Amino acid sequence: MALKSGLSVAIASAVFVSQLILHTEAQTGAASTSRAVTFDCDPDRLHGAAKLTCLAKRFEEGRRLFDEETFRGNGRTCVTCHSVRTGTFSPEDAQKRLAANPGDPLFVGDGLDDGIFGTTRITEHATVRVDIPLPPRVRLANDPAATSVTLLRGTPTTQNTPSLQPVFMYDGRDLTLEAQAFSAVRAHAQNGVEPTPLQLELLAEFQRTAPRFFSSLPLFIFAHGGPPPRLPVGVTASEKRGRAMFDDVPITPGSTRGLCAMCHSGPMLDVSNEFNIFLPDLPGLRFFGVGVSERNTPNLPTYEFIVDGTDRIVTPDPGACLTDPPDPNEFPPELFGPGGPLPLIIACNLFKTPSLWGVAHTAPYFHDNSSKTLKEVAAQYTFMFKLFAGIHLTPQDEADIVAFLRLL
Image (tube, rainbow, N blue to C red; front, side, top):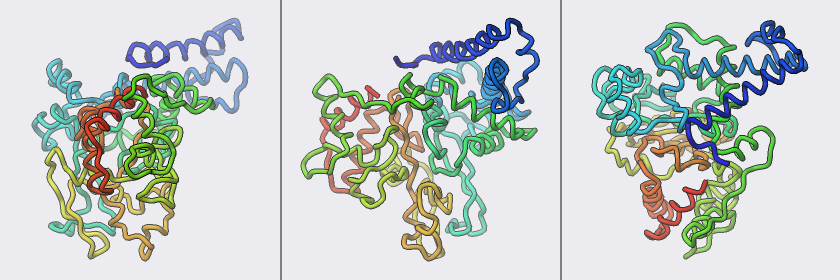
């Protein structure tokens, strides 16, 4: 039972709130409890009808903050970029919104080509300008005094992410939903007033509980303590071959079985398994490079970065190495630390592995939105496997990957 359309998830959210309120009023026999409890309540300190009313009020305020609150900024809200339907926005979405309303808050600041004028980039690629601070160990070769770098990135989908992934943003720079929301309000909404700790808490709570942030009912149930979702087995021969690529098995030369599971394993299909040929001794990792920055299909401007004083890399986006140290939940701090066994430059061009559940509905793909379709995603993996592992995928292999991804 998938919650695919914006209408269905809106209905589900409304039902979720109304059931809490109706149950509360049935318990009390009146609306007095509803009036007495406000959204700044603490549900852990309440019981019965009052607790249910508290949860409902907090849910509704979280929705208001996500959908309506601008924090006196440039007119953007969270839903400006994280749509109800997909959790992100596509070039087609941007084109329709521009045609309907050139004053749409999507087309301000970092949504414009140079930050001031132009909508060509956002309507072609749905990317925005993101200013990332440079850590002490990374410098620009042509501007050693620079303290930040401007990169072009897509908007990560909020579907299946808030409750079911422990790290946020493509480079993993935010480790909590509250931190992610605070950064977004400042960077993208250009706020005039700061969000309060309670508002950040309610924003995070809303994203963890509202059905619209899940691609299907099984994912919603899993996030709330239910069993993990099961991979579909497929019906057609192509779907079944694609399914076999996600088996947790050792890689056999000449076979594609288990190939995708190396990095897309676990309940959310977002971590590496023990059979990963690139990092076989570190299962459970969720940051990898699949050749997106190396390939640079959109022909984005490149920078030369100097890492740790001597190492150099030319790339349009170095990803995780700009979060020095990389996610401590992902990598032991000493792994990339000064004097560590791995130089920090190895973390360059690594990005968070997204969950694949509902992936057919969250285009475009990768941190730079370089793949607009699942077919282009499969072609990117053909490029990656050949470049990094000498493994050659056939056109049929690509078609099998796409056929299976459409089932998720």
